[in-house]
Amino acid sequence: LSQFNINEKLVFLSESQFWNSEHQRKYQENKLQKVIKHAYDNVLYYNELFNSVRLKPYDIKQIEDLEKLPVLTKSIIKENFSSLLAKNHNNFKSQKRWTGGTTGEPLVYYSDKNSWEMHWALKYRAWEWAGYKFGDPIGIMGGASIIPDRKSGLKRKLWNQISNFYPLPSSNVNEQILFDYIKKIKQNNIQFIRGYPSSIANFANFILKNDVKTKIKSVITTAEVLTDEYKQIITDAFGCLLIDTYGCADGGGNANTCECNTGFHVSFEASIWEVCNENGAPTEVGQQGEVTLTSLTNYAMPLIRYQPGDVIENSFDCSICKCGRTLPRINRIQGRTTDLLKFANGVTLGGPAFTLLFREFPIEKYQMVQ
Image 1 (spheres, rainbow, N blue to C red):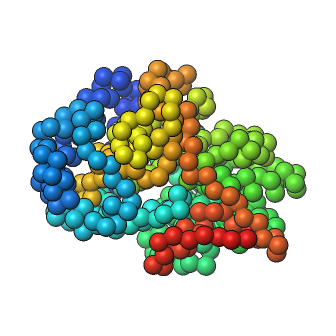
Image 2: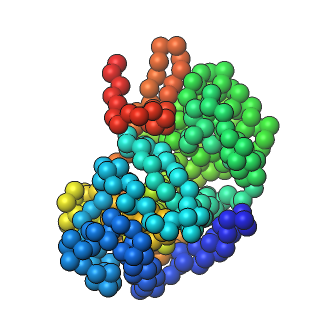
């Protein structure tokens, strides 16, 4: 972890989660002004955009000033990809990345070293809320591991080994494979499971059906909406703490439930959140709208007022949670839900598997017909 300065960021995040709202706002606006100036000076798309609407970087000082700018969508990014990449992106040790595509539309983007460090530090902070400590064995039922036939690269294998991650692919799953997962969990003393709610719920159903006893301390769900049905099944099977997480690495978005289950704590350190309509106008309190993110950390490809395609209710609660954290909260993430597909041969497949699979091909959109 020290190589990526993730530990350093974790120390910062352990403190910032208790900052008061005034401190949070000052931090965000200081970061915002720097990102805006960098984007204007080094990103052709934003230089032309600012000039077209007759704005200068100093016109964006407060969070509310962002409303002067139009929103950024995935289609706009695809159409203007090269002009959205900072001309000095190599100075920030940038890398090409892909979104998981859990909204059905994967995206290619560039992320710099600092942004990626913050992305992982925020993950680890939420996992710590679940009782996890770095090095604890954790079973992964999601991410790229859902495609078992794809050979992992050396970097991925090393990362899994160092992090003590145990991939439990959630595609091509049948009863024998699920029994093997139980054996793997017990042999390696795995006490934490992270993955898609649909995949974990399918595993939980199997555990309940076969009356299997496990020693799982916490389950961490991600990528899909955790429905009430999935939540009940997972809780019945494992009887442990359940932490639900939302991540949008491309936009810097991160939010997580805590042990008190009082909503999603929004990580203000990595991005500014707005709830807007498709035209960028803020929605009224209590109304639904699209998550609109402004990344505060990614200088390789700054995404300002980016709408990844997720729907939430404009219901930010800035009161102190029962857990003591002061991070603002939202009720729930209402988009990103997918179905679990069950085939006649007993194999089950989570919806995100298709977006991860199809992102390897030049396919813009797809539809499954039964």
